[in-house]
Length: 501
Image 1: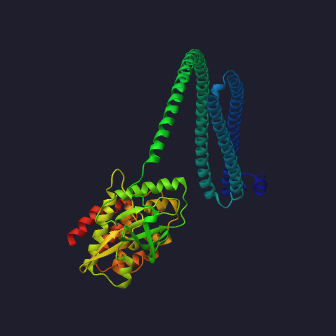
Image 2 (image 1 turned 30 degrees about the horizontal axis):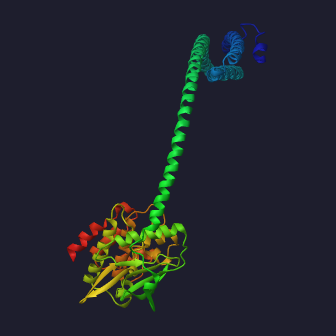
Image 3 (image 1 turned 180 degrees about the vertical axis):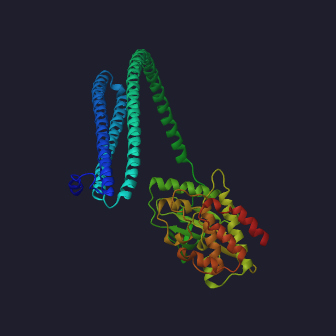
């Protein structure tokens, strides 16, 4: 530029033609720069006006916020029941403030962008001045691009100004709506106060009526208490009379201990008793001696109830119950004498398929009889090969189920024998027991008869797979279902076994 100015002191005739064109072009550039600076000043003025509007808007918002807070405090003092609505109003004001802050941030961001663009423009102009001698054509192209960019900037700024004005109008409209809502809420609050006062008067009237009814009910309650006391006295006399009559009654199944002749021949030992051979009324019988039993009044009554149930059970495949002692010693349980147990026979030899089916059918019929008892079914709870006793007719063994009279009693008075656990259903140790626990034990017994192995819960599936009869194996799987309801009934098992036998 200094070279160009130095050359300008020469006469017009001495300058070459290209130098005059360059000077003319520089003059045009300076004029355009002045115009661009003027435009920049105008833009800055518009931005200052926009900032002033925003400050005015903020000041108005702050004044409105102060007024709103003062109104809210007054409303809180007047009505404690409207706290929830006041919190909602505060939440709306916070949203409004956040919205205004966002607008301020957007405006500041736009201003920074505008300033950045102006700086870029100035830097671009300086570059154009430095490269004007060597790149006139490029400068012209850049000027065109710069003018287009400036027009776009003007359009964007005008659009942003319009949007800002629109936001201000929306904000003012929103503030007017908030004022209207606040006034509406005040009117609703006053109406609710009037309704509450009316309800309070009604409640007072109801309370007075309730007090009158309570006094009437208290008088009636005193009369009823007198009647109840008289009924309790009558009931006590009646219970005393029934107790005296019950003490005079005798149980048909009670046997005197002196009438039983015990021998030293032990037929077997269980988890809660030992079985000996004995003599009763001249007949050889089996006598089970129950040991370690706590003879409390509760256990004695429970034992009498179970013996009454056992004495009433009559079935060809149930071991015949003859009677039991009921004195101060441990009970003696007298039954008919059988030849051997199913477990003893399995320890001697493998049973044929027909023997298995016949004995199983006898056991199923006996258990089904117990399940069909009225008014409540009898759950055996201890179906096992040790409790299936055998007697022989010709070459065929027949079965009878034992311990049906003491199973429930022993479950409630003693610890469950560890040996019986190998036959137990999953729900046997819970209070949720049905007749299906016997069906599960029946399936375990059937598997034991086929494979001649004591049941092992850890190898249950392997033992079932050892069964060669597919029909019986399918029956075992249905009996061993985890869900009790999925297991078959004993009557269904009888129908299946009866067809094959």
